[in-house]
Image 1 (tube, rainbow, N blue to C red):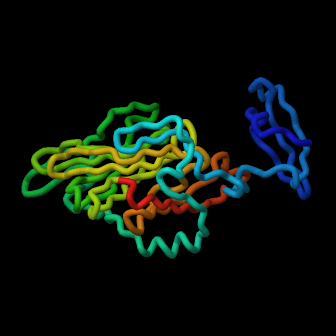
Image 2 (image 1 turned 120 degrees about the vertical axis):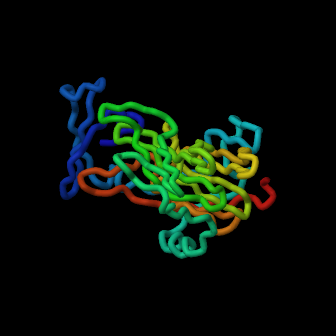
Image 3 (image 1 turned 90 degrees about the vertical axis):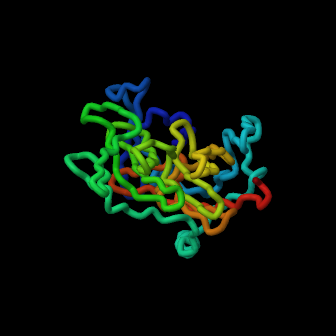
Length: 278
């Protein structure tokens, strides 16, 4: 039995047997009215077995180069190349990364569920940038570390009940001041003045963002935004740059998912920007 992929929108689980899968999917989103189909393993790929094989990595939904947004171009080729690489190549190049390492500031301490900055008799509570209430309480902020180049403290704001998590940057110079934020773990390149990140997009695929930040004036210029459509970000913290044009990230195939105690397969990509892009 073969079923078009888009016809499995109501699929909600399966069981694995020696030679086949038992697939369960509901009719009209009603689980009490469901169908069980028996499918040979050769005819069905579980979500945790999906790979990037045959996937068009270049496909994008939209992009913005500096101030120019583009919703017509659907390929990354105008910006550079993107290829799948092996885990071995990814790990080997991770030793050459040039991004800034965020270092914990010993003057920032957790005190009664609040992050507090203490120095020379001064004591300031660092509160989250946005107040988001959930059933289990407000959005939680986790201290990540300090960017020496930006002279800003970075916090991850998240909650078990909130899909989105993001990173907030605070200045502690005279008072606690919010300066900027990123949707993914920040990859900072002091040699270029760049704050960059990758993150999964709530709608489709993933985002790749490069911006120029000027610590003295606190001005931020957007250089590049790309919404890739065919993969999600696996671990944004593991992304890195090896030079000003070459970026690596750990990703998942678009519709992959863990199931039945088996983890989804991780893939690795390399993005090579055109040298004269900016």
